[in-house]
Amino acid sequence: GGGVVHTIQVEVFQAFSTYAAIVGVKILLMGPLTAYYRFTKGAFANPEDVALKPAEERKKLLVTHPDVERNDLETSVPFLVLGLLFALKEPSLAVALLHFRLFAGSRLVHTVSYVGALPQPCRALSWMVGMGVNFSMAYRLLSSGLML
Amino acid sequence: GGGVVHTIQVEVFQAFSTYAAIVGVKILLMGPLTAYYRFTKGAFANPEDVALKPAEERKKLLVTHPDVERNDLETSVPFLVLGLLFALKEPSLAVALLHFRLFAGSRLVHTVSYVGALPQPCRALSWMVGMGVNFSMAYRLLSSGLML
Amino acid sequence: GGGVVHTIQVEVFQAFSTYAAIVGVKILLMGPLTAYYRFTKGAFANPEDVALKPAEERKKLLVTHPDVERNDLETSVPFLVLGLLFALKEPSLAVALLHFRLFAGSRLVHTVSYVGALPQPCRALSWMVGMGVNFSMAYRLLSSGLML
Image 1 (tube, chains in turn green, yellow, brown):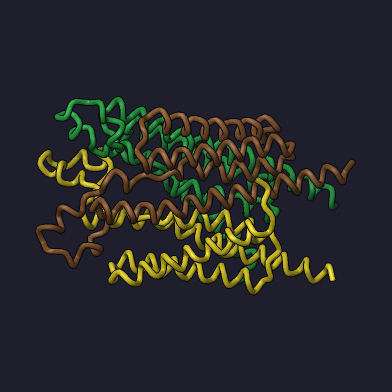
Image 2: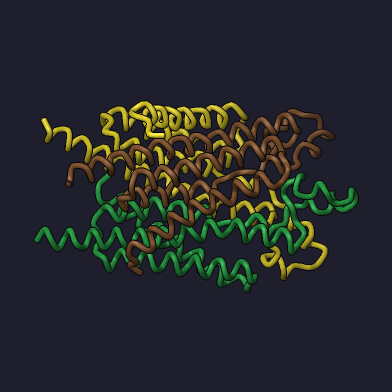
């Protein structure tokens, strides 16, 4: 009865908390990762970071390196918001965990593909899995009742 | 009495879920839209995407095109967070829907203006409407009681 | 008993609402700040914004200025999501306020350092404080019970 439903909801919320913390930490680590690329590949975005370098080196360093610009906010922000609202719609724990695990796994593969510059299919496929999870959660939200 | 208040709260939350799903899907679609611009306008952000092209073409393609950089995370992230907290502050359904509809409409006009490169007033005005909605929700949150 | 616990939870949530509104407004203000830099420093990201300028000026204006690219979404998005989940884990009001105040203060110093181009230690230190708050909240979420 009600007790079982309540237990499942608590577990779904616990699952969302766990995966949201993992995805949040991953977003945070993109900053240091970018900084690492900036220093190893000599690409700086901010003039004051290179103010102490000789004049002829400065111009070269102020190039925005493609590696520096990489981020996954456009995929992770929708996951964090849609996932929270999805968790509040009382899905079964198995369905919720399937979504959260697929998303976290796909982003891990995506980041490894990015950093290691693996050949294109890996990054593109992991991006598609993450998109699929997000669209599935959005569909479940919208199909559970529209209020426009 | 209490029953009516509860019904309104459920409806406000349903309305937020609906519009958050729409805004979340819109953020997700910015990625493919960017990819579309990359291929049609020949701007690539990642070296491995152009690794198979001839050497003289590579350099040209590695330009970050302005179209590629366009995103609306800076407006949509505050909406998603402020909107959730605003929905929990028990606004009337009419007031909540007014905020959510104006925001979703303004972002739709903003994206269409961006993609179609309409003359400036359209994009600037739609951006201002979205900002106004966000500031109105922030004001309601802060005026309902500060805890600093 | 239960009443006191409930009062504390309401206050923690009120505190999160207050600081989330402040951080949300700060994200919103990054847009106009960027626009201000675009006009004062002559850096434009969108071709249609400079369509009325003479041809030889256009090319020069279409440079993406480093100032324009600065944003703090990568730090603020995790704060907003981790902070909400952290507030729901029933921390004491003192611990919650410590986290929220440190984060808001560190982002204020970070933005002032950015805009005023203060020497590097200020911006780097404020960034580290914000990261510390986020990691502390993520640790509390994960240590309160994993559901993987």
